[in-house]
Image 1 (cartoon, protein in one colour):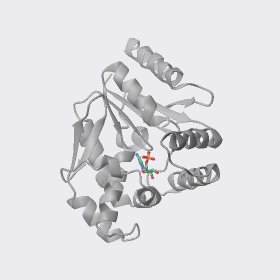
Image 2 (spheres, helix red, strand yellow):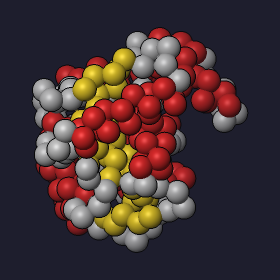
Image 3 (tube, protein in one colour):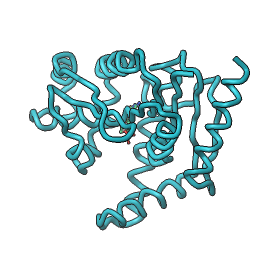
Image 4 (tube, helix red, strand yellow):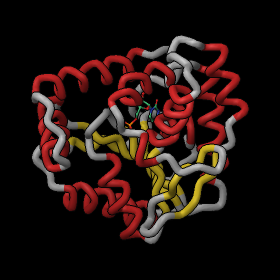
Amino acid sequence: MRLITIDGPVAVGKSSVGLLLAETLGFQFFDTGVIYRTFTWKALNAGLSPFDTEELINLACTSAFEFVPSPGARLVVLIDGQDVSSLVSTPEVEQSVALIAKIPEVRERMVCEQRRMATGLQLVMAGRDIGTIVLPWADLKVFLQASVTERANRRYTELVERGTKVPYESVLAELQERDHNDITRAVSPLKAADDAVIINTDGLSLEEVVDTILALQRERECSH
Ligand code: C5P
């Protein structure tokens, strides 16, 4: 087994689950949200708005992406040789990323980079369209689900722990808006692949979700 995909909506735990799964298996982990965020950061920094479609497409085509190992299993994206990962969770990036990720030509470029990265690695890749579009040939596809209130609770707790003060209602509203954008966009909408295993994580701990996926992985290994 070489490639495992984890898709699902915002704040469902894809990153925590994917990272622990990768560490347990000795695989690399890549969270594809980071490539969209990194590109959004560069676009905003260059003075573009999410509606400057032509300029955004040009920028996507002329930007250089590299993927480098960091301590642990996580791969880090460099854009034009620069690691901007500490700058990609700002409210500005947060507000624009789903709009920029809607542009088909921008997605095409990102998908191409994600496939290039996956070549030759043992990898857990997390995102929205990994099992359906990016790596449809993956060995195991998982789609995580959780109720919107559970996801808002988790995101809210995470923000509070990081010292960020935001009202719960605005966390919930932002999550619902992002869900709407991701589900209704014309290109690569968020949906489970036909052959994905759907796991509802409501009430499950991180370890329980990872154990469920490890059991699926062992099952697949044995049947080959
Ligand atoms: O997962 P994360 O919240 O970091 O993703 C940020 C945004 O990037 C998502 O809201 C979505 O619009 C976009 N995205 C995407 N396809 C992916 C991963 C992320 O469109 N595979």
